[in-house]
Image (cartoon, rainbow, N blue to C red; front, side, top):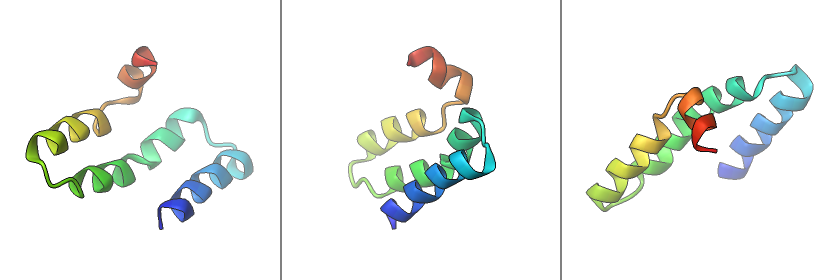
Length: 62
């Protein structure tokens, strides 16, 4: 399932001409779902804080 999601995002980027921000925003639900799989609450909270970061904050961090 994870590989299929990544493949879909890559395909969207190349076939649809999606911007980096559109791909980042489209992956938000996937990132949140991955964080929710974590059993440790503190780790899940840190993960969600990163996953819910807006694109501009993400770019500044990069």
